[in-house]
Image (cartoon, rainbow, N blue to C red; front, side):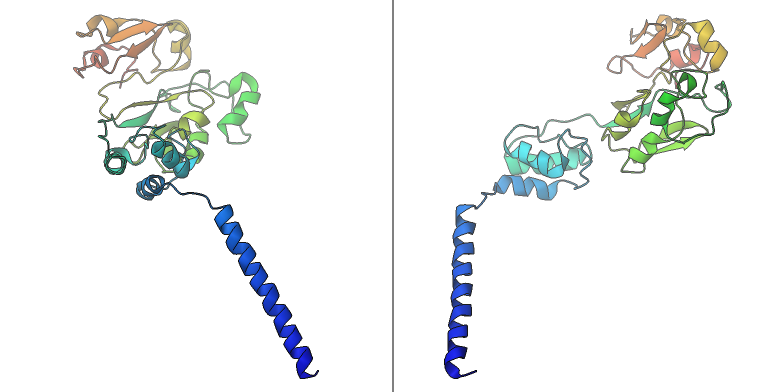
Length: 263
């Protein structure tokens, strides 16, 4: 190959490279996406778990919503108060004091307390049991199935199956709500971390029916409501409910409950 051919090849390659460089530069300017500095700052202080407990598609979705003032600065259940304060400082607002919450399983029908209709040997997944007779082997149709769909859903290892019933570790729980969504029996709810007493049952069956299937189920006798000095307890559909804002934690309901359904 002579020198002329080499020069031509060099010029062609250089020209193509120059053209591509100019094209990419123009495209970068034309299609540049403006980045909200506040959004980037908020995202940097969020925990990064991407659990979805805030109701948005991960931490980036929440950061965008906060930057646009579409979500409160304390919307992250995982970060809690410390993260809320940092986000509030970035946004130039005051973070309202939020109530720390944790998940609570409304059932204590363990293997020795609740009866079974039959022995189940199938797939160990609570959602699958909706397709088996009576919705599972447990005689109480409102009880925890104990196959751990909530355990699998929890990204913080805060819930475990103990003696056939899901139990939440209050200290590890971040109130992301994934266990609530995973429970086909809707037995899990968010309650204040400081909650003193709660009804660990969700059955709305009449007392005689409950007593046949579980030793610790609420029978709707209303004795707890009668002894509560603050009127914090009501009984609807044969199931007691405690208003946590009125409850003072005196323990009168727990002592009076004949089935020990209040814990």
